[in-house]
Amino acid sequence: MKETIYNFYVIIDEQDRVLWLGHIFYEALGTDDEKMALLRQAAERDYKTAKLTKPPAGMTLDSFNAMARLGTTLTLFEYAFKEHEPAAPLAIVTLIVNGAPVINYHSSFAPIDMTHVNKTLGSMGVMDDWLVEYSRDGAIDLPRLINDDFLKAYKLLFNNSHYTSATKLFLSCIDSLAYVEFGDAKAGDNGANVFCRWLNTYVDLVPVGVTAEELWELRNGLLHMSNLHSQRVQRKKVRRISISVGRVPPEKRGPYETTHYFNLVDLYSAVSTGIGVWLQTYVDNYEKFLIFVERWDRTISDSRLTKYTPD
Image (cartoon, rainbow, N blue to C red; front, side, top):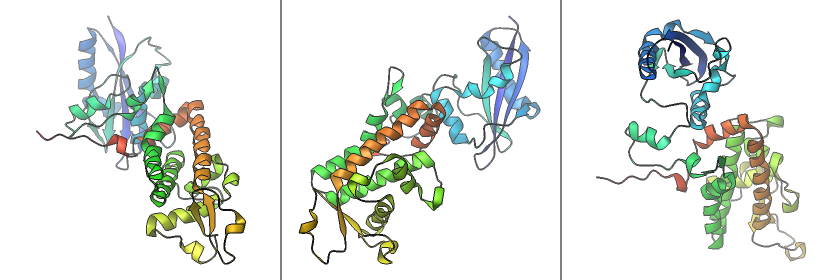
């Protein structure tokens, strides 16, 4: 049967920015296999004549890959179907990187199986795909994902009385969540770094008795130097804070004490509640969830180590 078939292109520069989306359609006869063979042959031959359209603002190769992970790449090209309105379009998408086609893997428009991708491309070892591992009945268990990737190790340290190491890991967790929310941005409203922005947006720190800025300076001192003396603390621009396990009554503090102590358990409870609020924003907004997938793919954790067994 004769039908309209489609070659789509994602045109990418050397900085992995998507510059254009392109399409060409053909009228073809034959079986589906014959039509697919025609598309693959034409993809490398005809890409320079594709009709171009601007992509969504800020789109990158990583965001395209995130769409492939979710099986939604074809939605990028819905504009090309308006005239022909195919019920089930026969199409392929080809990446054009630095002016040349890059074809090293073939898949359908279903969600990408990263295990199959890695095996096909000859990657060493096996890494579990978090998007598959934490998906059940069409939903993704984001709280379990956060717990396994970041909170489980914190609890292990805390329960074994390694409180300083637990605090370092917990503050690093906030760094990671802030990155997933805000990306590589260094400053936002009023110059706030993304660590503080995330806390101020999603976490009620009033019961803890500290501010996001104070926690940021604690983070800087602990992670970089294992002390409480960040530069802003030394210049007395920010109050020096430190952890306690349990509450320290004011009357028990020495009259010359210059460090304010907060309860680490209170901080954990406040941030855990904030994580729930934060995760709900991804459940409610598909476009934002797409960003979550893109950025979470870049994170590493104990639960996503590549397992390699030498022959």
